[in-house]
Amino acid sequence: MHDPHPARRFGLPTATALVMGNIIGGGIFLLPASVAPYGTVSLLAFAVLTVGAVALALVFGRLAERDPRTGGPYVYARAAFGDFAGFLSAWSYWTMTWVSNAALAVAAVGYVHVLAPGHESKGVDLAVALLALWLPALANLAGTRWVGAVQIVSTVLKFVPLLFVAVAGLFFFDPHNLGPFNTGGGSGIGGLSAAAAILLYSYVGVESASMSAGEVRDPERNVGRASVLGTVGAAVVYLIGTLSVFGTVAHRDLVHSTAPFSDAVDAMFGGSWGGTLIALAAVVSIVGALNGWILMSAQAPYAAARDGLFPAAFATKRRGVPTFGVLVGTALASLLTVINYTSGSGGVFETLVLITTFSATVPYLLATGAQVHFLLSGRRDEVRPRRFARDLVLALVGFGFSFWLVAGAGYAAVYQGTLFLFAGVLVYVLMAARRAATRPGPD
View 1 (cartoon, one colour):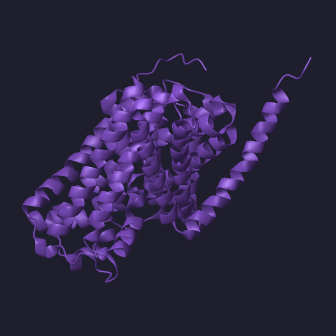
View 2: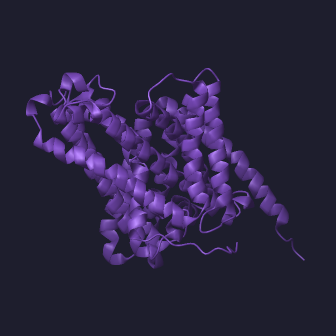
């Protein structure tokens, strides 16, 4: 559709900030405490996962060279396996984004309580959560220029304090704080796998640049670069940050910590201002992540609608942003947030959040499978022969990483997620019937 307001396309710095900002949400601020019960083997697990995440980022870069259109995993799955696989990719990614956006908004409320302590009120909490959703949505509706500006500023504002804690912690590092390598007492492989199951979803977002490839300048080059740079940047914060917290907070305290980065700052410099600093960084981090993920929630249905697999309204675009998709995704996330605060039970909310852990893996599996398909099917116009071996290894590692994500999601997540995935089949059938009804018949 014609856009009367031309958009400013994302350069490499903005695309990199989009990837890094989407990977680093609010979970990083609890990660050291989450994996502390497994011992320092969790650092090794992080390193292993980083290899898989970088391989996946490189695969998305290669795929974007082949087809630099907006939609990322959806585009690749449809090109390799047809409309149905493309739809499943778009459906899974879309549901994952708006459900996880609701979870991010709820998480932001907890950090706001640290900044402004007082009597808790469900009404106030709901208002704060909805504000956390709609402020980034307004930035998206204003166009890619605002999305890019918010993403760069928020990424810098959260990256700097996290990196500061990570680097400063190395100067206060005490090996006696680390605790045992494998606290479980079992095999090292068992401890590694257990820690990895907690950490697996830390790198969801590596596909962000490819999802917005159509809005990236020179996407054939910059999508791959942004994917790798953003993933590596997040990995640096994850690895060094976790190591520093492990080395500054005694292991027995870290296991029970509810604010590990704050405890690390207090251990390094004394006082209690660490909690305020980290809470502020967390709020900025979550709002920045929401800014990027709200855009992602509109990109997958936009690409599918462009091909007739989602309702046509999702293809509406203004200033480079699919505005209808932004509004629908944010409205659904808001509805789920309201349910979370008014239902009196987290059952519905928890079930839907569980679905996202599986839904995130479907597009990854289909995209990496598509790359293997392109490489092995002899489509020379889509594969550079000189890079065949390297690209095949990367694709297989990326597929293995994605499969590991499925295994790490757990039985309940896979069960609930599969049901929700199959529910999308009805939507596909309705859209297919509509396309068939509007297709001109034979003369």
